[in-house]
Length: 58
Image (cartoon, rainbow, N blue to C red; front, side, top):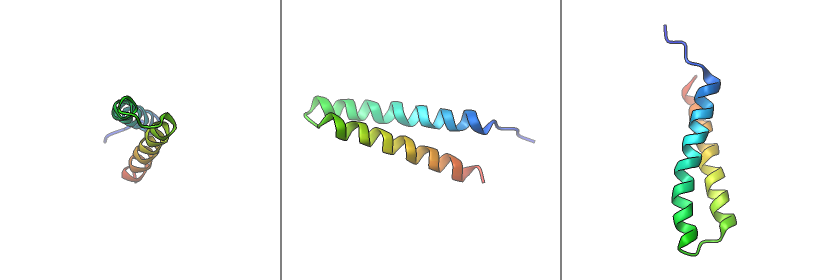
């Protein structure tokens, strides 16, 4: 009934999480946070979004 392309769904989730976390972490960097921590937070958010997307497709 509803044919959802899972590859584009995963890509959309990863991009959305990366952009959202990137905005927040760029603010944190401007306040003095170490850039490596900011990148790790962004990658963690993107990974979590992919995991949630994958689990919701089951």
